[in-house]
Image 1: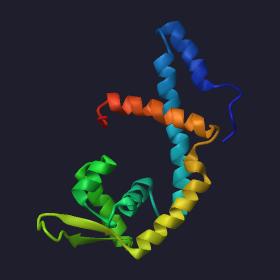
Image 2 (image 1 turned 90 degrees about the vertical axis):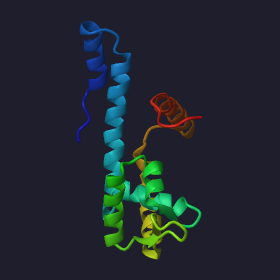
Image 3 (image 1 turned 180 degrees about the vertical axis):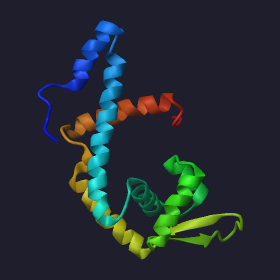
Image 4 (image 1 turned 30 degrees about the horizontal axis):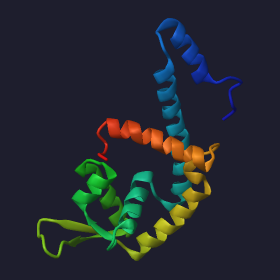
Length: 165
């Protein structure tokens, strides 16, 4: 894509200021949405050769980070902040690719565990190298600026009820 000779969000903010009122929130939200598109595109491109979407990659990473490499599907949904149907679809696809397997919970017959396989561990490692190589799509910021951005976005997430302190 050829860069524009001007910042379209800054221009929209000028017009918003003239015709609607303060453009502070509009410019911030529009910028966040555009950056999300940029990041998503870079991460998708890095994961595509590994046959993964970001949602499936996140699930593999979550299982990798768990103490035993396995979690109940309900817990996966909570941690990934996804509806149970979405978790089921993600697990179905990962299972069909041989990257996870469903196993019965040893003490709760009503619970199914999702366990990462050796192939899943390998795919996660390769995919992680790919997303790290593109800095997860985040360009142009220092480490300190990235930390500040994360802190600022956490304030919005907390205020929206994403998590408690």
